[in-house]
Amino acid sequence: MAQEQCLFEGSDDLDISHHCQDVEEKYFAQVVGHIEDILLDDSFLKIHKDFMEEYWTEFEESDENKLIYTDIFKKYVETIEKFLETELKKKIPNFSMLEFEYELR
Image 1 (cartoon, rainbow, N blue to C red):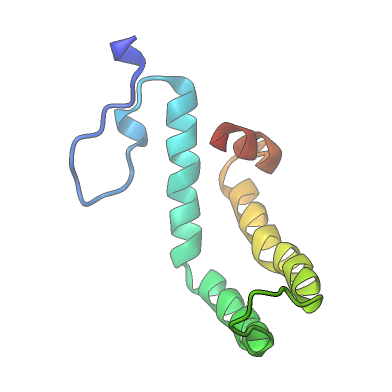
Image 2 (cartoon, one colour):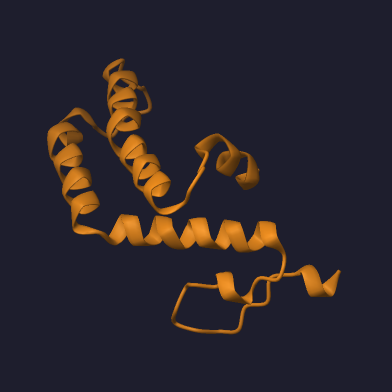
């Protein structure tokens, strides 16, 4: 079992996929590495900033959730999550967000 564990030696570089000996762990580390790259890319940062600029005024400090939050969440899924999934599919053949979400459990 010890050989199947993902071996991570302290490093500033977050690419740990080459330290993983198990195929599933290597794939998971590869996906996480690509997510990091996507989140730091200027195109994602612009989409994220534009989204926040459009909706930040809707939020307020309150214990109650406003109905608009549901619409904002739907828009978030349509823009941010869809962008992330599309970019991952470009980088990883046959990528499935549903399978990746299952691995996160």
